[in-house]
Image 1 (cartoon, rainbow, N blue to C red):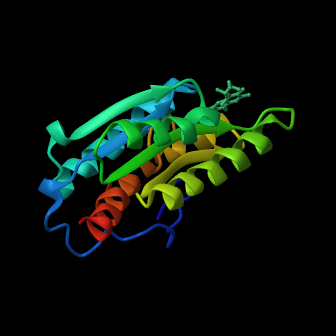
Image 2: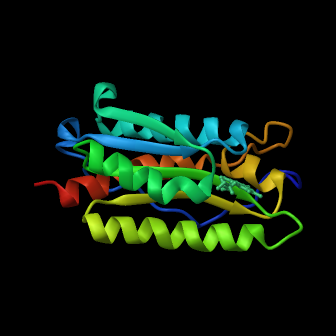
Length: 170
Ligand code: DLZ
């Protein structure tokens, strides 16, 4: 390892051992439109692993909401209007100089969990909550100006959606 390369990390999930049956699944993505560059990378990362796991592109629907605050309602509406097996909610909250960040983080996290438990449908938490723009770029795998562009967390969310959708599939 050179002095500038990224240190070894043990964090992060391993994908489920099997995604058998994924071709039957219908998956939704609802994404916020704040911090678009990062959001685009995260949505693409999610789509990549949904495809790798075997979900058909015609069985994926994508909608957007203004910001992360609107994600719980957006997911609830999507679940009520479409027959879906899981939804990935994608947003990026970057801390500013006021308390806005803390309130939106807390409410959107609680809201998404509530929607999942109330509807009995898996809702995948795809919201980055970061302190700097740099951290957001790294967690979307697009910090190309660095030696290591980082890891696209959307990859983990796609796999998580398939795993949880298969668990809930009737
Ligand atoms: C207002 C706001 C702020 C300050 N920051 C973000 C952010 O970093 N990421 C995000 O997704 N949304 C942000 N928003 C917008 C709110 O989520 C919401 O869309 C507006 O307050 C309108 O309800």
